Length: 75
Length: 138
Image 1 (cartoon, rainbow over the protein chains, first blue to last red):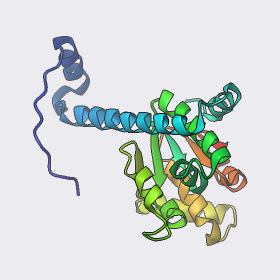
Image 2: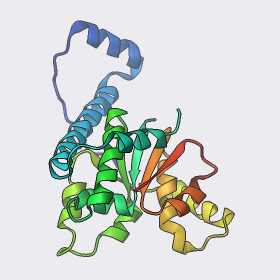
Image 3: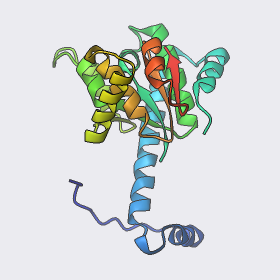
C-alpha cells in the first residue's frame, strides 16, 4: 500500500511546465514530478556519500575508473 | 525503467566501513562514482541484509549507510522470488546460493544493472544468461 499523497505547490519556468504537460498527457504531472523529486534526492544522497568516501579514501585512480566504466553493460 | 548499481554483501560492508576495508572500499567507491555519473539508482537487495546485519551493537555503520537517501533497499515480490527458485534449479544449485540469486533477480528489475560483489564467480554464473547485467569484482 502506498503512502498518502501530500500536496506540494511549486513554480517552474513556463517552458518546463509545457514540456512536462506534453510528456505526461492526461495522467497529469504528479507521478512524473514525484519520480523526478525522488531521483534528485537520491542523487544528492549518493553525492554526499561520495564526498565522504573521497575524504576518507582519496580520489579514485584512472585505472580503477576505467575498469568500473567497462563493467557497465551497453543499453 | 532505470539503470542501477546493485550492492552485494562486500560492497555494503566496504561502503559502510571504508577505513577498515580500504582496498575493497576504494573499488566500491569507484563503481559508485561511475553509477552516479550514469544517473543510476543504488540498490541493496533485502536478502543481503540477512548477511550483513548482526545485531544492534554491530549494525550502526550499516544503518548509517542505509539511512542515506540514495541507497535504497529493494524488497522482492513473489514473482522475483519464484524467479530465484528457477535460477537455482537451472544451474542445479542448492539454496546455499539463494542470496546470490536474489541479488541477480534484483538486477533483473532494471533496464541494465551492475552488481558490485566480492563473490564474482558465483554471481557471473547466475547472471550469465542476462546480457544487461554487468558484474564488478571488488
